[in-house]
Image 1 (cartoon, rainbow, N blue to C red):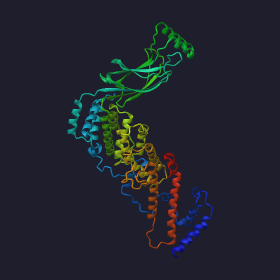
Image 2: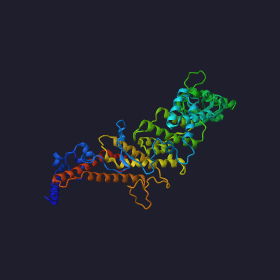
Image 3: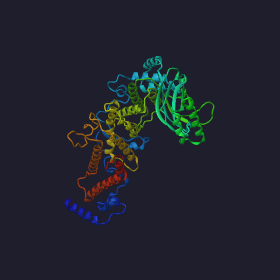
Image 4: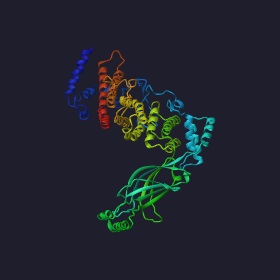
Length: 579
């Protein structure tokens, strides 16, 4: 039988099978073809039946080592790794540094910085020796110093010199940072059954220096969320902070007070109003009334800060007067830009040590440092007076750089974006933080798009791939919320040669890049299975040729099934893009 006759017979069989109705099990994919592919496949079922794994992955007869671009290798993780990460790929962009992870000096500190490893090490030792939190004890100090020396890779002779300098330095000027968050169930002080509360803060040793919050009218559950910073001139461990909640009494005339009579609540409220009228009529005075106070010893505040409810008290009276929620941290007076730069470099150094010492697999690390590393990190952040936004932008900068050479978990970047996204739009266009944000985006995106391009290369018998794709789409969805500055190219041609650029300016956006990644991935996968499933025999039989066609059809059908079952809704719900 020649080839032409074979294909004519093949066509006749297909035509006959198409006349048969589709099976109920396979009806979902057969609206357009009537199920004839599956009917055709049953002709040679005994010889060509494929198991579940073969339907979902390249044929078992293919070479096990798939030839993919050298810079786009699938990375398998050890058995202890998070299953989500057995799917994703490793991509080393052209700008990725190639030095060993232990080469601290070149990797941690950006070009042009005036800081080096020894400078940062001295600052960290200084903070450890002058820890102003309640954990200050000799045993903990020694442990942290040894850990810092190991993390910074400082030889003993150099360590002794730097340590001596850090010990001799004058202790830092300390500030008490206070956030008055809210109060609940305050005691009523007004005739209407409510109060007009405000907060007064002062240190017990300097009670003449007082700080007042705003007044929240007519409420027993006020919300302030106001920040204060108090200098501490004496020993901070012996200092006491006094937090008082007062009811504000506005300067009103007798007539204005009489007009409140309709707002009176109960007999007790009427009695209060009549007393106020009498005092105003006789003396014209209006005095604020204390609701309650709390005394807080600063030695109870840990280095990482403290957020806690305090009960309000007044004298020896046991009556409940409500409670107040405050956040307290102790910090040293330091230049903000210097502190942020230190924190970025510290994060990179600590993470490099963590990855190296723990042999953390690619895509595994999701933000949790070891105990000593976390103490040093949080102590530097708090004692430098860094805000959550300062810490988030520092993490974004440090982790995106490390991600280029040692891939981190996508969930880590999603959690940082949750903090940054609400404020990115408010940053000035020429701000350093905004430039840092987009530089991090540029570094992270290649591995995100690698996931989208290589979805088909892994088994989807569970939800691991879906989880990875979901994290990536969340990142891309947050990134595309903001317009990319014209001075920044987050899709350089040298890295994204697969992107189809329509206009003369070669400009593309996140949505178009996603579509191109899906289309390119589809084309590459199809070319791969066609090339990999070709027979090397010179004289194939007609039956072998038919089996070859059936296998291709079954894999394509399986891919369509996966798209409908796992990915279509995910793409549309996350970023309103159909796969």
